[in-house]
Image 1: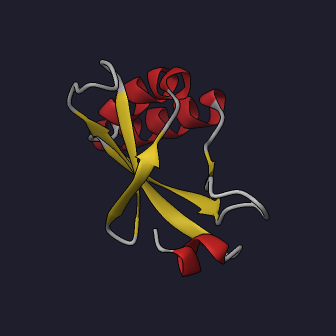
Image 2: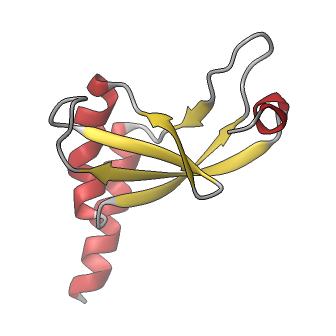
Length: 97
């Protein structure tokens, strides 16, 4: 992201996308904003999210915000494990009906 985008504090949507194995390890979930890769979820978070994203087709849209004052790190709002589990279960139930 460019400096102007990092300085904004407005809410925004990010895309989380599973990526194949790479130098980051076996669990990679890339974060995209405006069609560009802006980073990766931490490995421990990616390991927890990966099974759910796989069940959703490998990607999902989540909310977030720009960087906090004095930081270049972006904030991504991830659903809780229980909320994500419930959401995926409902989708799969609808598909079976």
